Amino acid sequence: MARTDFSRIACSIARSAAIVGDPWALLVVRDIAVGLHRFDEIQRDLGVATNVLSERLQRLVNAEVLERQLYERNPDRFEYRLTEKGRDLVPALLALMAWGDRWEAGSDGAPLRVHHQDCDHVTNAVVACEQCGERLTTDTVDYLPGAGGRAAPGTALIGELLGRTKD
Image (cartoon, rainbow, N blue to C red; front, top):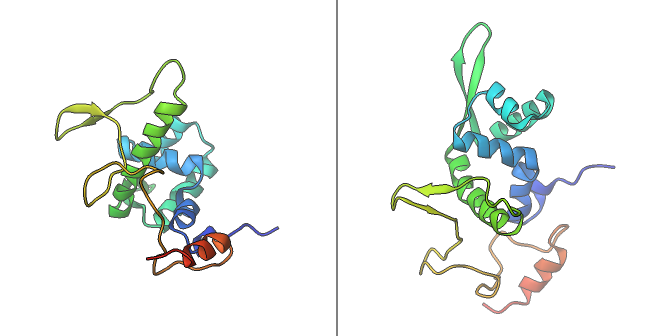
């Protein structure tokens, strides 16, 4: 059975999931964001099989989320750094972390805290409207069709629903 190509679905969530939609990929991006850059560091931190880590790193490089930088020759060794596209993914990871801290942290509490350098406070990420700054929640948003949306596999019913939505 062929694997679904989520990158071809007319949905930004599906296309994003095609790149970072598995736990190893998200954890690799997390590790690089917090300062681990070398293969052996990431592998030791995650305890992931080397072939799995190699595949995730290559997928993230191919998707331009990460870039490889040579740091040693004979043999060639590389560090991995977030690209601009990768840095733009960090707020989504912070929002996922805030959700996990609220719903999945358990009795021990959050395993990691976020310090905001600008205001010098420990904080949690929130998703807010870029226009007014108010928090976005399921009760405060509506979904409208976008220029790239269409009814197709992966969005068949959503495409129809949004096609009936008033502007």
